Image (tube, rainbow, N blue to C red; front, side, top):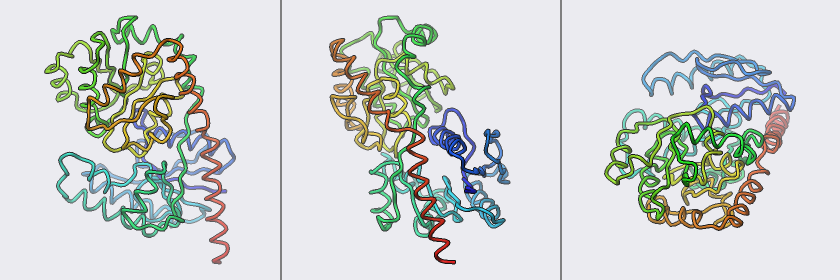
Length: 372
């Protein structure tokens, strides 16, 4: 099957892009003739044919529109059995809503963004994508409900296909090998309890709540490791006001994220909006309990008291209480939670993701043959 995937360039610190990279590799390994259409900046992917979309360096709204136009031109060249887009384009049979709904994201913000030109264009494209695309893929049940509710999409057109995770790269056994050097690099005392926050876009991912939760912990020697891309200044100022300057470690975006799961004792993601952050699966696969948000699609795989906790991200004290409950576990219970975390991630393989998408591909091909 000749499959065209439209996606932005993959970067190591982007969760959406990282998930796409794993999927593309898995599709190639499963025998698909994969063609990847991406703007400049995408390095070659072994086994996939790369088509560079001519998107010039424009303001954000210009890039959104130029990508849609360039993708349409490539698709019109023909020869594809199935076109799958991970971007807001108008030429695909399958749209993967890996970022959820822009409309829902805007509504989630404390200070709703003014509906400037960029937001109006994205919302208009999003509406047309959901109206015109044959099959829509949500990455969690919450995302499926959101698409159906906000855009009145027939539930039969929306399927849930969860992301896969690299179960070898993210594994509890790395703790012994990678933990000591990583903690030394970050300046974490050997016995200090470490909370890991991973995410780019600090406001949406709830970094302020994570810092405030650290301040409320009974353990005053605990540390917060922050991995991700964003403006650290306001959050550094918050940490200073709370007397946490020496307890928050700013690590920036890291390609070696598996080292930091190994270095940590729990993962926290009090996000305000998250379709299904890969952080959930990566942390669980690494044997880390996850304290997440009731507004995150990833909360669907977190069982409170078994492999983590689900809290209100707008209540830092609730986040702190959930972290404290993990901190207070006996060594035997902590080991049980680590084992449960790993077990809960193991069904989320790239093979399972490819199999679910393969059924949609077959439906698209069969439907086109029926129409012809």
